[in-house]
Amino acid sequence: MRKIDFAPPYIDEDIIAEVTDTLRSGWLTTGPKVRELEELSAKMFGLERTVCVNSWTSGAAIVFKWLGIGKGDEVILPAYTYAATALSVIHAGGTPVMVDIRDDFNIDPQKIKEAITPNTKAILAVDLGGWPCDYDAIKKVVEHDDVKNIFNATSEVQEQFGRPALITDAAHSIGAIYKERPACQFADLSIISMHSVKNVTTAEGGLICLSLPEPFNNEQVYRWMKVNSMNGQDRDAFAKKRIGSWRYDIVTDGLKANLTDVCAAIGLVQLKKYKNFMLPNRERVYDHYTEFFSKKDWAIIPPGRGDGNRSSHYLYPLRIKGITEEQRDDIIQKIMDSGVSVNVHFLPLPTLTVFKERGYDVDNYPNTYKNYACEISLPIYVQLTDEECAYVEEQVEKAYIEVVS
Image (cartoon, rainbow, N blue to C red; front, side):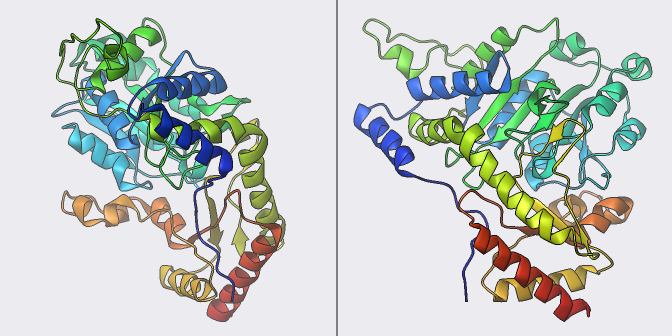
């Protein structure tokens, strides 16, 4: 029996050498390699600035702090996402307003429109699995005069927006394309995860991508976020290291959210290899699965390309027609018994205790439940061979036949 992991990180000798170089440099915390990662990612995404942080969650905390989210403020987000999306709003003091999704797994712009109130301060969309949201439709909603007219700003930054901010939970979507451009250019701010299982990893880490409209100055916001990711300190340790530069000030009540150079070293090598090696290999796996499952009348293929859009292929969320949640779980167990690790993305937020206790009910999100109940995430990563892909396909079909037929 084969053993196929679900999402092992890609670590090669170049990454090991880069991390070793960092260790030997004597500079482990935030320093030159963090700056290099920020500069490289900004260039790749066509942005003025990105901000390195130590996790997606820390990035969200900084974004909501900058936006001034607090008690009574509402943030609209999909019911189909990982818990951190909604928990980040709760930690900021706001209220998550969950809405249903479309059949591409992403937030439904019509449901956003129906959920907006004067207290709506932001839309937190999610590029689930790396497939970009319908940004044109979402922006049309948040920029409509009816929305602007009822918008109730409670901070200076909100006043400058004059409408709900559009933020993307881009945890999955590093490298995703929308209308032939990097997807992170279309939201006001996008927050990327670089956790161990993501397309590009820094072991733990994240990026805040700044694509703010006028009158915002992206460079000024970058500097604000850098200070607020370092306990509000006006100089990082790298700047203080210079002779005569020991003195510092704490200028605001910042957070401890900085990324280290040791972690950045991993991401630097991966990002340099991403466009020409890592992403093409994820696409290869996606295409292998799609060629097989598109011939099966019981399979629903996840979105990957079309209309100038392209997924980052973080997930391969296969759906199976006409099955119950219980049948899906039985299929998963049989696949895993064959040595293939699969997963489900995600348990709908309203099914989780922390949200059920706050009054959320999954029955209010029928499309979320419908897509969840028949979804199985297949392994998709750089190291997966074509032979291993064929084995995964064989075991999925075998399990389906055993359970359903």
